[in-house]
Amino acid sequence: MLRIYNTLARDKQEFVPIRPGEARMYVCGMTVYDYCHLGHGRMMVAFDLVRRWLRASGYRVIYVRNITDIDDKIIKRAAENGEPIGALTERFIAAADEDIGALGVEKPDHEPRATGYVPQMLEMIRRLEDKALAYKAGDGDVNFAVRKFPAYGRLSGKSLDELRAGGRVEPAAGKHDPLDFVLWKHAKPGEPAWPSPWGEGRPGWHIECSAMGCALLGETFDIHGGGQDLQFPHHENEIAQSEGANGKPFVKYWIHNGFVRVDEEKMSKSLGNFFTIREILKKFDAEVVRFFLVRSHYRSPLNYSDANMEDAKAGLTRLYTALKSSSAAAGPVDWSEAHAKRFKDAMDDDFNTAEAVAELHALANQAFSGDAKAASQLKALGGVLGLLQRTPEEFLQAGPGAVPSEQEVVEKIEARLAARRQKNFSEADRIRGELEASGVILEDGPNGTTWRRK
Image (cartoon, rainbow, N blue to C red; front, side, top):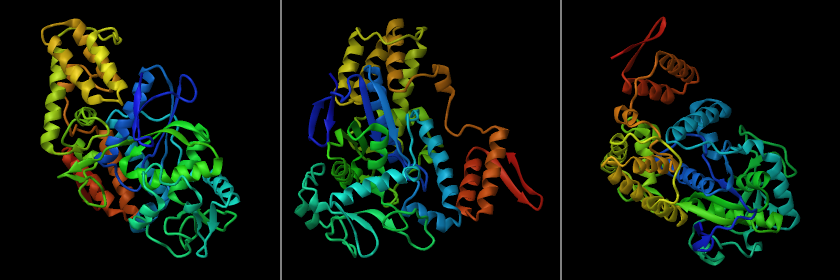
């Protein structure tokens, strides 16, 4: 039986879905104001693997991954660029789709945008107010009254007094308690706003996931996931809002993936030590990046370096070379075979991909000796993890920085010109740099932009 480490229980628990044969899962997605870095990529790949294994285990999976398309950072970035918020978010949604898709991450069943669920957020806030769990502050914001929700702190494992003493939440004018958090922000000049019973404003960050999760998966569902950094306060606040409004348990299993680290520090934009996925893909094949992420357990810290990426490349090359050694035809997994049984045991043990990948290497040892059945199993089990689906020749001849087609060059030039018209010169420079990295030189002149290959 599948066992999942449930952050809420702080233990591995047998997965028993609420509805037999069905697994409903919500994962916090991207706030779309910049490019995805490898930490985002790890989260996306981790829950792509969770979904793939649930499906391989026979469950009908309903997977929701949201997009935050209204937020302080988005508003600030759009103002800095001098472009409309909608143009900014559409551009980075498209970029995220491209980058995450390159890593073999499948699209979710539902990808709701926060701006499309404001009515549901307002209804949830109204129910919280009716239960005296929300109040309008003097500054016009509507806040959640944390101390009126006795179960607050279950996910983080801290009491209210510990959280307050830790200084993790800055007090703000109008709050009854420093731990109270914003559900609805009053309108500020020049910012997007929606009408509400409490005046013009926009939703706080936390309320969006509660509203979208409940709207698409029901008031109680099976799995909620995200990075460890979301455990507190975001996911803690989601529990408080949802259970406070609905009067029933919100989520049965909470799953949190570990951080990607650089020089033993968490990779993050705030620390300035991040590498975007598209930067990394200029140096390494996309499947190598996925293999780097897959071969470690999702909850363990993962240290990024060129040396570790080269090691992942060597490991994946070995697996593909093993397939090249045999003329085995692709087929379904034979789950009665010994390596497949151990692979299944590993994945059933909290999605232990590290042990599962070890079985791929064991099969490769047999495939090198010409064992066609072992090679077939290797390819089939690799497919469960989203790996080894190219021919060995395609992988061994592939590499980063593929030469763009003429149509792709023209499209990028048009995107660069659009960025310059919007005075988004950083984006225009990024596109020029991307083309130069792939061997395309741009030349601006009085008659427009021309290009040539190196």
